[in-house]
Length: 150
Image (cartoon, rainbow, N blue to C red; front, side):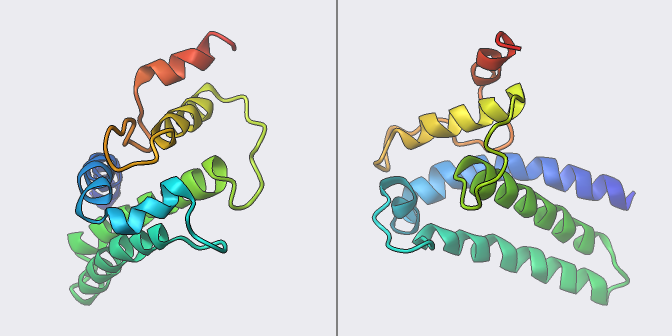
């Protein structure tokens, strides 16, 4: 049952991430997210990196609370959020934005589709008129682009 809670939470996070990205990051917290689009920051860190804390604090709190209560479902919800955050870091920061220069030459249609959709998202440097707010699941057309090449 606990594995199911982690998996369901992980997959639900994609929808939460889409909504948060579109309506919070491109909404009232654009001041934190803007430098991720216009590259107005200096150094390796962005104001956008504060979103890591915004998502990590509830996840850690849930895991802590759940651990105090016999590792109940709160712990496993927090674990699912944490695992999604790890996947986000690996795919978004390392694979897509190459903050650490590895995984550059993939042939995976899935990974190439995600990278292409993210590139489409970043062609908009402003808060409005964005597209492709998802992370692990993006419009199917981006996957199809690379399926034909396999």
